[in-house]
Image 1: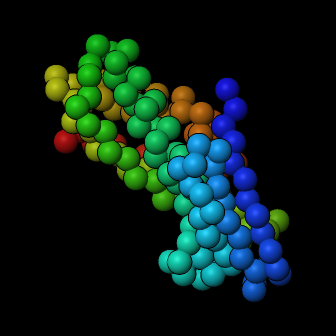
Image 2 (image 1 turned 180 degrees about the horizontal axis):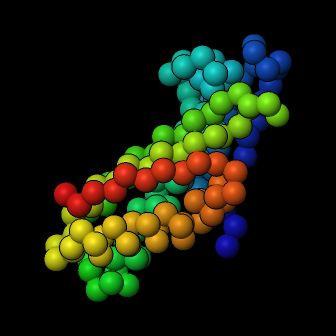
Image 3 (image 1 turned 90 degrees about the vertical axis):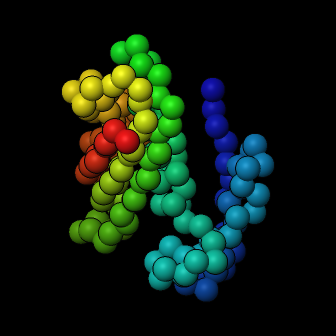
Length: 143
């Protein structure tokens, strides 16, 4: 399975602008720019925001799978992801991803939930993508 997306950029780095679209059409010509990425403007998205969305979704699904493997069915898993883009010696890089999750899981003990959350963090494909070069933190709680 291959997921696809595309981006179009026109102009210089600071004055230019771009759009991002996904093959499914969920994103269609979503705007992004230097201002949204580096200056905090809220008129579009950023590649890092899309990574945050992907990681939050991936972790939530992975946690659901881990809980299912333990014989538990979550009623709700909410995950937020904060992706930090920072200037490093070799240029800009994603240096940190902070995952925060809250889950309602009838019958789950703290110990079983904590193990499922740690295993989900380690096993999520997006976590694996960043595992060797980015700090990934997790704050997971039972609701």
